[in-house]
Image (cartoon, rainbow, N blue to C red; front, top):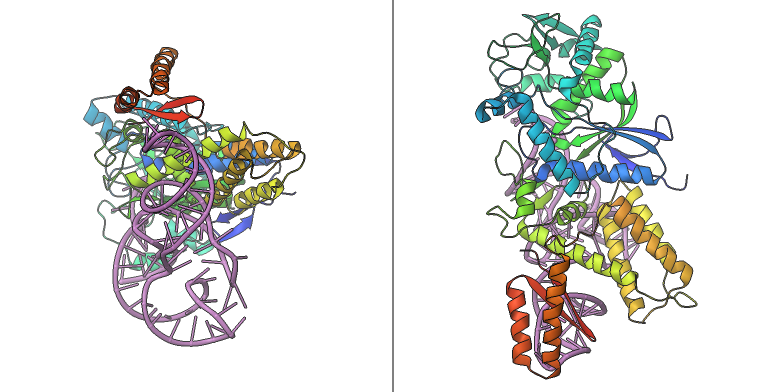
Length: 490
RNA sequence: GGUCUCGUGGCCGAGUGGCUAGGCGGUGGUCUGCAAAACCAUACACAGCGGUUCGAAUCCGCUCGAGACCUCCA
């Protein structure tokens, strides 16, 4: 294996050599959204991070099955195990059928994910479609003695589990410490222990999303769906489980406990977590209300923005930071990313024009190696991008005649940009959305008249044309033998 | 309060015990009728104080500051 991918495993807190359980097959499960609102910038991060991983693993030749769930039931608004279902709440507020809410936001999510050019997962299972499987897992955990039933609800018995296994190994928590520092929460009377969590919850009379079971008319607990759906589609033991860092505790910790309690062994080999996007240094999140939806970013309709940003600018913005670092949002930061992306694509256009020589005065092979090394080092996309910018400098120097490139090297150089920029980073060149054939011809006609004016040295007229076009959003770029123009984004 | 993470130049953001990160912005230049765009070249940094070391921004300790998780959260 020439490529050795190292990936940071939250479980060991180390970068580990990636070796699939059953090579060349790779199973990857990523926690998807709870669909009760439009996706915001925070949702874009795991989507893009694991899209990058998905693409890179495929590039390395693995057969990857990528499963990302849709949570359409079971998450509660308030305290753990009491309170109202988020989707139900939203349905009540909007006077919609719960599944209507789900469908609306699933559609919106898919649309946003397409805009960001993330590849669709291989399987996108929904919690509501796996109620029976979840009940089966609850039964198995009960049978194994790590859960108890009370008043029609079933709770996971943390203390019992911790006697035999280690609850807290993912998040580095110690159960005793947790117990000593518990906040007082309401609605926990039924539980033996505050850290016990619901596997099955009896529905209150007003609760409209519920299913029959042998314990009660109720609904599944909020950690269960991932344990169930990941192993159902990826097998008892699979390679990668991903998600946001905020899910490490308690969500993923509980998932581990459930899986181990049910099957006796861990299901996941590598736990991979992306960090948060912050705004003014603080986590962007639904509950804090400081989030910006992707739709707002793309349309510019937000006070914080002052300008709209293309999906690719957002994608590039996220890829310019390492996935395990926080990334601070600001309009300026995304603007900078957008400009950088423009420069990258301009360089690639130049690459497609440069001419070959007998020999190369540049080292293309080492550029390729640096790009590979960057990704192999825990998906270091910012380093990869910095090398790609170095390459752009080389491309420009060849174009200007300061360096030369051989035919073979040019082929390789083009391959590098195709593979890394388009295939792996998943960037694409967006077509000008406002552009069309008629507009192209009209602007060309005007600019040809401007060219005539310039030849007559009628600069007053030519400048006026340039200024007027600029005002309506067109930038004119004069060239030695003509002109180019493009639409500026507002 | 407990556990953990982080503090890099105007901004975003890599990295690391000795070798330029990169992008945006700034400045200077090439180009241009002038601009713009593009390209080239540059300056600006490692929170503070100690310690380890031939050498630390990088390791250790302390101080200050910010944040995450402990409740749904990507």
